[in-house]
Length: 380
Image 1 (tube, rainbow, N blue to C red):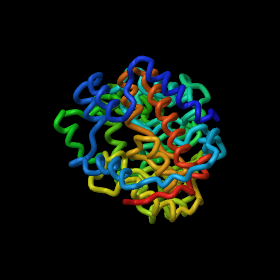
Image 2 (image 1 turned 135 degrees about the vertical axis):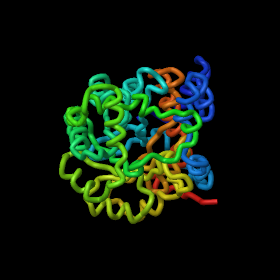
Image 3 (image 1 turned 90 degrees about the vertical axis):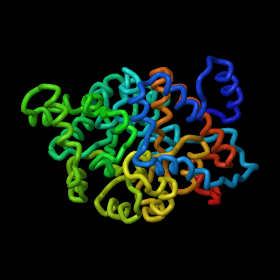
Image 4 (image 1 turned 90 degrees about the horizontal axis):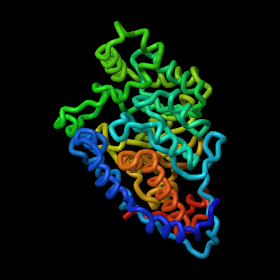
């Protein structure tokens, strides 16, 4: 891995190059200028009064790193292993739907940017380009597929089959979106990107979904998606059946309760993603970072535990790893990079986040990811 003491030259090069936002707040402000009011509102906002949205980031501030020095961190190994694959950085790109709201190249631009750094890209069910389009554009780079369950179970199974055939390496079943949260920003803007067709690519290319339509009109397609994407009957029986239908590892995304983590393992699930959907579903719930320690304790190393929602800084990655995560998911900031400058914007966001994470790990005293378990974290 690159030596951490090269960071000075890296920082000098990006400071002297064209201006580009560094932190999440600056990225958000710059992206707002390039997006419509409705598109930006959809991307930025959370559910209800946005208590959980704010809590996701503010909760990280309650945890403080107690660094240990006089370790040789001249060559820091930031690699992780998940399901037999080695990845150079301890984070993945979180699934985000409707990316054409940010840029025309959408998922393809993000997948290509992720491929440059060998970062796994998790593609959303409601993406703007299909599984096959993204696979073709990004080659054999690491990709996972996030699945929103369909009322017609055969659509779900077929999308998983398509992802497996296209070379995707894991399935992420999101369990907290069986109905949409109360999103007042979208209501104020009278905006539903799903109804406007921004997330239809995987549906219109799915033969099972197509066979359920009365006709091929846009109205029929959108109504078909809406009929399937609300699935309040989703339960553990579906999870167990999905496990039988694929050879790929399956992770559950949206776990906040230790009991759900236990049941997931009993159901044969291969990994858990601690997440409250970026504060976009139920407002007033526990932050992901606060939920993490109890879930990591319950899992006790039986399967990988990842955490999502609120990751904005390299120090956040250190805190999450120290509190029991095996990796983290990085979301909104890369979407803002996409809105600012397409694929190049995503690449710049990732380059900065990679370097900030390396510096944060080294300054905490960790020579590799395993060593983060020994970092002392104080909750204040």
